[in-house]
Amino acid sequence: MKSKLVKTEFYLTISFLVLLSLLTLLDIREDISEGVPFRHWFHEILLVIGAIGFILFKFYRAIKRIEVVDKMTKELNRSQDEVDYYRNKIGGIKSDFFGVIQEQFKLWNFSPSEADIALLIIKGLSMKEIAELRGSNESTVKQQANAIYKKSNLSGRKNLTAYFLDDLFSHSL
Image (cartoon, rainbow, N blue to C red):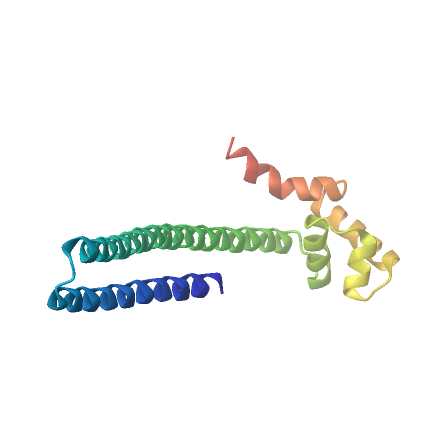
């Protein structure tokens, strides 16, 4: 909205100055033909020169602003391309990581229900949150969690999560 208002103001200012200049030039022409002294219409010429100078200044500023907007648009597009690149890259990594987790769950012979619960445990949800999400009792989720720890030979939630995250972060150090 502000941009539209600025453009409207710009066009009105330029239109007014052009109209003022044209009317003043017509008046100067009439003054010369009527023999009005030079000193009188010389001031009017200065007014026209000032108006034209201001018009040129406004156009110069508008061109500079357009250049800045173009530069910022290019930077924004480049940044968006970069964000898209990394979003896609991370998406691929997340998909690969999820695949690795699922393969390990198969090696541990998790049932589909145990695999779901194990994934929610790795994501950091509490037993109560998992039970609510799955529409089951918290005691059932705890029993399945114990089965998960037993099948994986891991002692609990922290070790299950660390099993997958330790290797992931140790390669980046």
